[in-house]
Length: 333
View 1 (cartoon, helix red, strand yellow):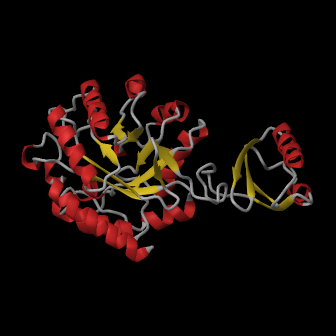
View 2 (cartoon, one colour; view 1 turned 90 degrees about the vertical axis):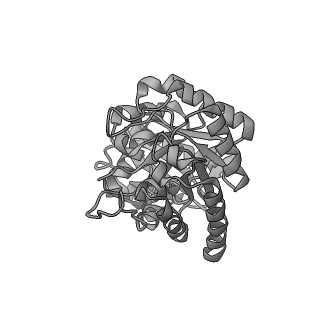
View 3 (cartoon, one colour; view 1 turned 45 degrees about the vertical axis):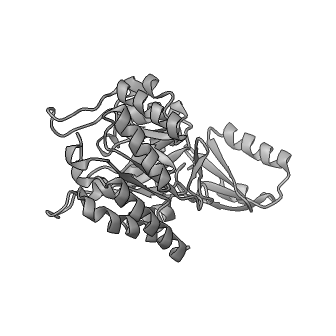
């Protein structure tokens, strides 16, 4: 249930209403926008007298929310959420360019790529230290050492860093990582999501290979229920009947997620296609659809990359794409 208050409501009256609602055993999520305040009621609202609340002179309207996701629901929070990662804003009209290699390999590699993508307009550096791989024989990442190398690249460039966490047991290692990524395979790792809700760091949550938008939003709800509202949704392609590329990029998810939720939505065209030459057109389509950012894999030597070289752009290719992204954004804004 949501309670929309009238504008310019007396603060004491508002506090009295919130206290009364809490005394009914309800949690109250407060969203203060530019023109109105929305109280999201969480819990058993079946016994709440809607007519009584609606009759109050400080209340504009009362509505029941049928969706199971509450905190990430745009009805609860009409204004866009803006996630702030070390000064880089994502959402609410702020566009982010996240780029870097699939996996961190050496200090020279990650630093050189970080400098290259920053020069091309990227404002966040990505790099995998813990790598969930389909085969147990593939490169699994440098783990803690990889995170340290990412921090060196951050020091060299000033770019905030994002890296994937696979287990709640590794949270201590991520205390100095700016954005924690939850990969597609862990989207419904609920123990991890619960811990991230208490961790307080921005979370980049990727959609699972075969998950619906509702399931993605419910995973975001797990994080937000713990008190962490700094969540970024990521569309990275889903498994369909396509047999010529890795996954199908669901571009329609971008406007639909914006309609359903106030959280920022970014797109990963690299994992969606698995083919470097397909990344630029898919990236541009995501921008045209209204994405709040892109996360793209860039490697200075894709042929010899230890992970996903086939989908990685070279720095010069990323630079060319960045210029096109700016043009598309100018055209659609």
